[in-house]
Figure 1 (cartoon, rainbow, N blue to C red):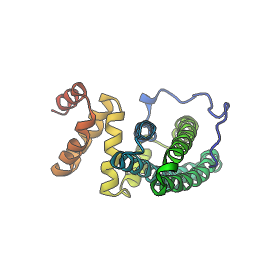
Figure 2: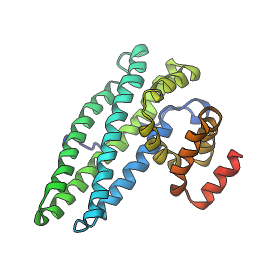
Figure 3: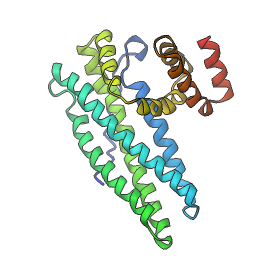
Figure 4: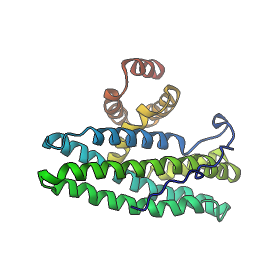
Length: 237
């Protein structure tokens, strides 16, 4: 694992008030934080003697790792490329982080497979090792996302209009498969504010096929409280 934590890693937040500009990072990063926290918690409480419980937890770990790897590539291909086009060294720090993230993801996949393959005597030790290393990976990613949401966002807002950033996001989203879109919605919708949910799903209701919109609602409903679901259905009409 190459992950390291530095006390001085997070810069001061100097970005303008987020309501003033289109924020390309915030919703997907809330999805990532939600997915990461739930997965770490599930792995921490897993019963390694229960085959079904263990398989479910490890499957979620692998799903999270795959999600993170795709997210890194999306940011490299679209967001970092956009920053470098108008500020050549603007995304250098987070680009370097991404190299380490992909190395860590590969190492964590190997540790996950080791837990699958372990005998009963070793499984507890290997599951605990995976839990601790996943926690370090998540901790580094939380700091990394803060840098993206402050320094990288400031660079985007300096060099791009909101219309350009919305077009950039639309081109990125167009590359995501339907299955990955559903997975993103599962973690994003419960992780964002009621106002953000209404804006996101209201846009989907207006622009997506009715069956796709209904499938998203069906996917997220079990993960919203009754109060949040009531707000959402009221606001969506």
